[in-house]
Length: 143
Image 1 (spheres, rainbow, N blue to C red):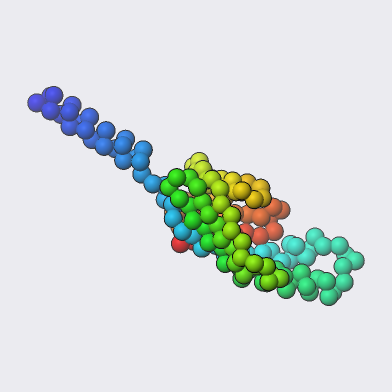
Image 2 (image 1 turned 90 degrees about the vertical axis):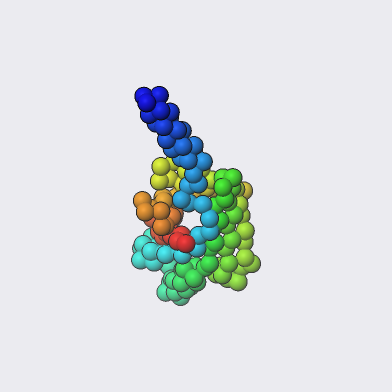
């Protein structure tokens, strides 16, 4: 009887270990990104000599940036793709990709273009947030 309990316990532990070792992280899959820009912060950092028309152009550019569509796809093989469309100035849609790692709630994205990005995965797993340098804005991804 004791042997049966030990074998049962061993089977349960083995199943738990193999399930956790091969369980897909909750970040896998497709995410839709929305850009939020801190217009006041950006305007406060502009030179005092900047004229009103130039500032208005910057505000308009920020409004257009906040309407961009960003699609992030995190794959099980630790690669990702990101597609950006609707960028200001009539820019063509852009695509990038690279590798990702997850350590705790920190998602690290290392693309083929640009600098590596660090993102935070919400505790409930329902969003991923990237904060722009200087805190001037964020990109929040949701499913």
